[in-house]
Each structure stands twice: as structure tokens, then as C-alpha cells.
Image 1 (cartoon, rainbow, N blue to C red):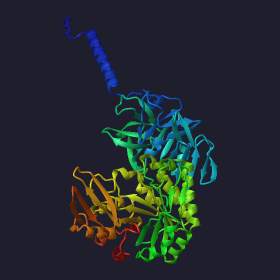
Image 2: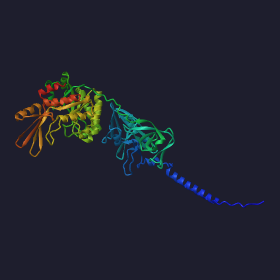
Image 3: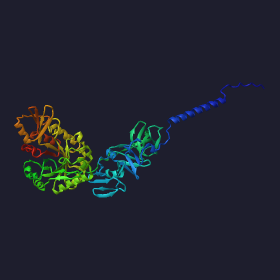
Image 4: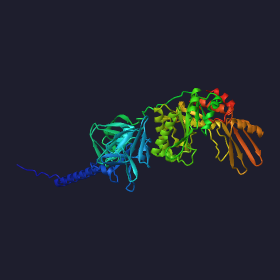
Length: 576
């Protein structure tokens, strides 16, 4: 038997194979680790106290419309604090973002708030608060002060404006505020997911979510969305981890019922400037020579001190005569007669404002007035809160006593926004446009007292804030003769309707109709002075009455008795 020797195959040694496999495995392992390290979501959790970081003891973080309002270490206290377990919002933040109706008096450390029917009062550090004169308690202060800053308790805010816009979470303390008009999509989490600090898988986790959890979606950033959860955590979540199921609307709006006393249409109001008790005795003649007037407003009251006192020359006999002629009486209160009175102090001081309201109501009841006409002029910007609070508080008491409240206003300008006509419209029964003094005694250039275009623009701007059925258009029975000197300086003198016609005749001044002004215009020169006159007469008043009709306003008002003419009442009668 023979044997053939087998040839040995040549190849890669087995040891080498093991080495190659091991190297490949190591490469894959390292690559996998690198891949995971680079792309796999991190499980690192961030401490919420670090995310909602604040720098002062008892300070709370604030999230406004889902956005954390971060502060720096150098800032003073933020927008919220927690005191004895109760969250409080800083009053400026509250007014800016939730309700401007909170009015704080730093002199008497008192917070006021008016609803449509009641006035709430709370003082700093006091557990008790008042609804009108009724005593109530929260069990903790409604208002506190810290380091010179005033804060209002969240539960007190909710009591006044309604619940639903503010949420409080602890550990860490944070307050979520949603302003009126804010809307969010509602998302339902479809699987386990995380809210992260930033929109990427390597960003630390702020909250773990489970299937079925609800989130609120602010904005879609591509593959991620910025959201906040029911647990008060805001951050980013993958879009594929949730589905939109609806939306939530924080536009609760003002659901209060602001009631108004209506005189109806065709109000013809005549302002009667009365400067003494004796002048009241002429009322019968005033009515006999004033056409179809159905409301008269005598200038009877003015602020007399800084504590809310008023001077009065009211007459019950005057009212009786008016009522016998089917004419209502709306007593006017002014702030311009006594230069020693600081209107800002009166309006911004709670006790002084109360006195002013109570004094006016007492006068109205004593003399059987039908209404009160508020003529507060030259209002400083810092008096804005106190002024509108005065209108609210006076309105609430007027309604309870069946007294009509009307408020005189300038033609709207940027500087007159402090009068807040839109809020006036909620509380007052009528808003009167003083459609005159386009150019006034102190003007630096000559011009019409009430050109037609200026009046119409004033009406349109007022109607942006006030319903037409509450607007009364005030018209002037006077104009000005302007003296323009060579150096350009001007001065003027007011003339009533009869007086200006006499002036024109005496000085031989001819006039021509000015379509733009809606008035007759005349001028002449004597020596080095040019005299310019935009005439107010029956024709110009009728043009303004047409504007009143065009915009379907509640009526017209006329300043003042004594400046009128017989002819103008014939024109007015056509429109009332």
C-alpha cells in the first residue's frame, strides 16, 4: 500500500484571524461608543432650581406667557416673591401684564381696585380688605412691601380679576402668568419623552414625561417645539413625541356688565358759567333764550383744597325751575379755579379722592341734580391712575343714586392719553368731546378755535375708544381775534357770536368762506399788527352739527351761555 504525501494548504494563520476579528470588534465598539456619545440622547437631568434661577431670598421665578423672565444677580427683587407660603406679584408687573386697574397710593399705603359695581380696598400688611365698607379677610396680607417694592397676593388678584391666568408651583418657587389674549396649542404626549433645556438630544433633561401627559405648545422650531407642562416646566420636546389635540385660550376678556343711564339721543347740553349764588337767579331767562336745550350744566363746583373739599354755589331753586321746563341739570365740577389746589395730590390720595366723591354725591342728592359733569383739565401724567380711579369710584356711587355721570375730554392727542377714554366709556354714562381750543389763548400761532377737519378727526379718534351712543360733541359759541405782530408773536381775545359780528362791522372787516376750516375768515392790518379772525357763527356751527349727525352721536354740547346768538338756536333746533 502506498501513501501520497498531502500538500499543506497555505493561508492566513488562525491566530491572525482572531486578531483581525478582535480589532474589528474593538473598532466597532469604539465607533459605537463614539456614535452613541455623539448622537444618543443624554439622560443628564438639570436641577430646576438652577434653570429657574433667582438670586434673592424668598424671590420666585416668573414665567410670562411660557417664557422664563430671567434676572441677573445685580438686579433688585424680581417680579414675584413668596411670603409665608403665599405667592405675590409685583404691582408694576401686574398692571403691565394682567390688569391696569390696580391703583396704589404710596402716601396711605393703600391699594384700590374697582369692578363694575364694587370698590376693593387693601392696605399694606393688613389681613383684612374691604368691599366698599364690608370687612373681609384673606388670612394673610393682600398687599406687602419689600425693599420699597409693593407686591399683591396672587389669591387676592384672582379674587378681583378671576382665576385662570396665574399658576403657582413650588420647589422651586415659580409663578406662571398668562396674559389675556394668549393662545396655546395643547399637545398630548404619545410615548415616553423629555422636556429639555434646549432643542437638542444633548441638552439636559428638565422633566420626564409619560404617555398621555399634557403640554402647551408655544412654537415649533423644526424637529422640536418649545412647550411648558402641567407641572410648571418649560423647555423643548421632540415634535414626534406628541400630537396636537386642541388649544387653550386665555382671552377670558372683561365679562363685567357696565350699566349706563341713558338720556337717549338728541342731547342738547348748554354749559352755563355761573360765578356767584346771585347769578343762579337768572336761570328762567337763560332757559327762555336757549332754544331746544334739554340739559344744562352750571359751573357750580370746584376743588377747594388738597383733601377733596369742594366749593359750591349750587341752588335748589335753579334746579326746580329747570325741572319745571323739562330740562335736566348736570352740575359741573372743575379743578381750575383755585391755584392752591394740587389736582394730582387730590386724585392720588385715597382719602382725598373718597372725600371728593362723597362731597359731589352729597351735593347732587341735596340739590336733586340729574347728573354730574366732570371737567378735570390740564391733568399731569402722574395723576392718570388716580384720575381714572376717581371716575370709576364716582361712577359706581352715581349709579347707585341714579345720577348721570358725564366726563369732559380734550380732542384726542398723544399727550391726552392719560385720560384713558376707553375706561371712561365703561364707567361714565357720557364722554363729552371739548371740540374747541384747537388754538387757544396761549397758542404760539394764530388759528381757528375749532376748524371743521380738526373737529371731525377728533370725533373719529374718540369713536375708536368710545361707542357713538355715549359721545357728546362740544362746540364753541366763541372765536378769537388774533393779533400778529411783525416779530411773529401772537396774542388773542375771545369774542362771542354777537360780539364778533359787531367787531367785524366796527373795523370794516370783510370775510370769505374757508372750506377747509368750515368757517368765514377775515383779516386786516392796522399799523404794524395784522388781525386774523376765523369766525364762529350759525353757519360754522351747522357744519359741526352735521358732523354730529354723520357719526350718529348722542348729541351736542355748547360752550357757553352768553356767547350765543339768537340765530344759532334756530340752527340748533333743526338738529334736535
